[in-house]
Amino acid sequence: MDAIEAERNSEKNADSEVLALLGKKQVLKRRFGLISIFGFAMCELITWETVLALFSQGLNNGGPAGLVYGFLIAWLSTLSVYTVISELASMAPIAGGQYYWVYMLAPPRWKKFSSYIIGWLTSLAWIATVSVESIFAGTMIQGMMILDYPDYDFKLWQGTLLSWMVIAVAVFINAIIPGLLPKFEVFILVFHIAGFISIMTVLWLYSPHSSAASVFTTSLNEGGWSTQGLSYCVGFLGNLATFVGADASVHMAEESKIYLTGLPRSIC
Image 1 (tube, rainbow, N blue to C red):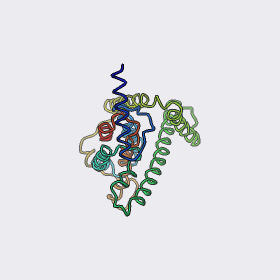
Image 2 (image 1 turned 135 degrees about the horizontal axis):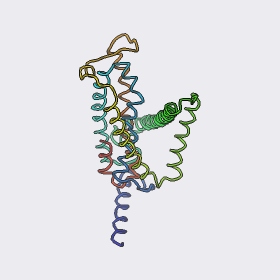
Image 3 (image 1 turned 90 degrees about the vertical axis):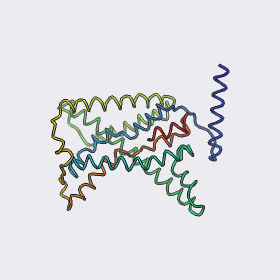
Image 4 (image 1 turned 120 degrees about the vertical axis):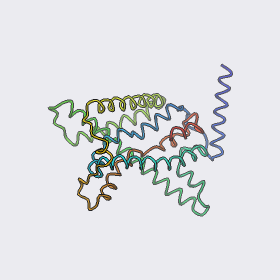
């Protein structure tokens, strides 16, 4: 027991020393391990769920070909960005993330201004992300109610209330029972993977199958845009949304136990 306690104290001291070098004091409890922080990042991305929610946008504007190639372009582009973020997270694992790194790397003349702008942009982005994902979740719950109960007379305001319910659950978990958050993230990770396998299995077995040529060569412009290229760009927004939030684990750096290696792995 004494050896375990000594090891824990050594880890705490190492954590405090790393943050001290970055100009901060350790005040948060480090609850997240590799699996839980990976689950946190995975469930922030919600890639396949976003594909289902925004599928019609890319299908109507670009068609099957636009969806496939747009997804690959979005994936490679996002990978290039988050590879750099992973490297920065291993160098300076701090919850501030981008605004701190900008201050660290920018020319002295522009440090404060650039950091201020990036800090506000990041904050606004996360506020928008919480809003969008809550609306997604709330309206998906309402969609399942419509499918399961044919007599259900749905109203738009009910979808809004369900979205607020999602926000209330998130606030409860983070503010009232934060100690259970890592376990909750692991549960959601398993649920996320199980849902993907289940839906893919159902689609594989019961959906109508088309030829490969119809998938990789069919382009659509159902939005009536002036050019097919413009239609691709409009549909591309749906693909891009599937990769928003991969840097989420960066902002949990001060609550992660294995931040130097765990954060880059959870991001990429």
